[in-house]
Length: 164
Image (tube, rainbow, N blue to C red):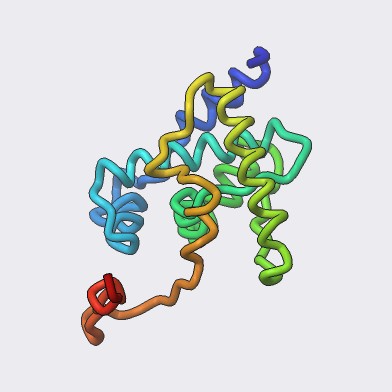
């Protein structure tokens, strides 16, 4: 990393998404909504910060893992934290999250995802953790999500009905 990149990375890692004044903070909500344990949530937030850093130092579009994307989606809801504190004050740039336009983009996003993981290896000198950055095949295989209120609905995995 250049000195400028090291400085930016330090600013990003020092940036706190959790409000210490809150009884129910960002990471708590992230874990609840994704059914992650707290340790995994903390790791996902760090991987999100790494992804944001990679976006800032890259000239080409990058694609996050689904886990990192879940952190990003939630952070976008915290508008003050995302737009003012992170984008304006820390990064000095706006980072927009564009919507997917359909199946026709699947190969493009798959290619960008592989490039993202390669940039990760180059910059951080380590492999992206497989439990947060899965293979492209796994990343883009299970993409049909819906929001369900588990207080009102039972969820039965299809796997118990599949023939072996």
